[in-house]
Amino acid sequence: MSCPYARFIEHDLTPPPTNESNSTVSSKLTLNGTTATNDALTEILSLTGYDNRATKPELKRLPSSDELVTYHNYLQLEKILDAQTLLSAKHDINKSAVHDEHLFIIIHQAFELWFKQIIYEIDSIREIFDKETVDESHMFVIVNRLNRCVQIWHLLVDQIGILETMTPLDFMEFRSYLSPASGFQSLQFRLIENKFGLTDNSRIQYNNSHYTNIFPSGHDRNELQNSVDEPTLLQLIERWLERTPGLEDKTFNFWESYKRSVGEYFKFLQTNAEDEPNPTARESSLEDAKKTADIFRSIFDEKFHNQLVQRGDRRISHRAMQGALMVSLYREQPRFQQPYQIISLLMDIDALITKWRYGHLILVQRQIGNKQGTGGSAGYSYLRSTCSDRYKVFIDLFNISAFLIPRGFLPKLSDEMKVKLSVASVIGTQDTSSTMINKIVNGGSNNDDHDGIDKKSNRMPNHVFSSNKD
Image 1: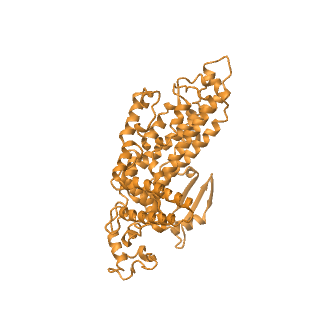
Image 2 (image 1 turned 60 degrees about the vertical axis):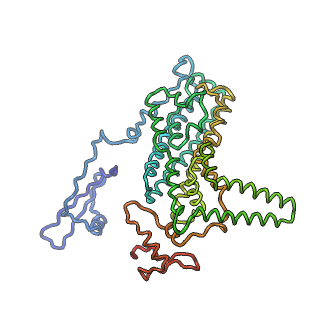
Image 3 (image 1 turned 90 degrees about the horizontal axis):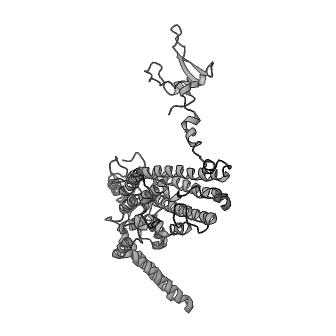
């Protein structure tokens, strides 16, 4: 997009005089009709190596004044600001419009605009993840857009507070005009749920029927069906986590090493509990250790995990759980830092959606109590059921914390794995990680400048990744 101020500037380079050998190119700056010699412009042209004799690109002219983009027509404000039709004024011309209906409309229109932006961001993120190999140079973009969604959800949660300034009596003044409309009929919110990864099995039936029945439009139903047929963000994240580097490495098998470390950790807990001199405290500590062991058993037994997935208690595969756990335990490693942020942001979004649902629930309870909703739903009772964990798409990422162990018990990474977790996988570049691993671990057999990993400090020398080495 060209600079809107460009129309005020004309750059006129006067050809050098033929009768003066030491003459310089003069530059003139025309600003708002005033022309003056600009030595600074001449100097910058000289510093940049600009050649006046070079072929100049053809510059596009700005549109005429009647075609210029303005704030009003760019945002199409005539459509947005004329979209608030108060039914209280339309259907009862003998009475004044209900003041708070205007707020009610504005809030929900703002919700829908932000829903559109969230869908736009989720679709772009899904496109990046929907590859056999995810280019790790795109991690920043993913983190940035997920964080944008987080900030939007914060805003949506806060918007409910604005709607709460409307009293139940004020809402009653125009509520009767809204039937049979319902917030459940928000197509975009249903699309967000589907694209995020909410399944039919996790949904509570609306008025004892499938949620798509509330949408009579063929276009709307096609949109909903497409959002189900396409890979959801949950499915794409699952595939991505299943490819976590280190799950099956020749020099470091995370899962087997992790299980041994958990065994050492529980032996430590058991010994500490048995050494407790106070009988009550000893019995309590042993009981806590047994309960914790039961939790860990649920992730060590892959068949049991798959049963939990089939039952709907878990969402992602056993291998994806391993990947998420490895990223969480070794989040300080360079290659895991942004994946850990992605996991955290996904939980943030999930938590904020739940918070938004709960805020809506409390708002409805304050406004209509336990009355039936205008769309025929059970109102408060239905909304309360949507605030449960069954509506959390990334519930498994929340529960990863149950399987963390103290840093002192973490399996030590092999030298090769440390290098692998320091080098990003970027599509379109030659994979030289194996060569780099060989140089670093073996003390630089191919290049004497590479000193290898310091066995005492367990760190790589600072110059290993310098740009002029390979």
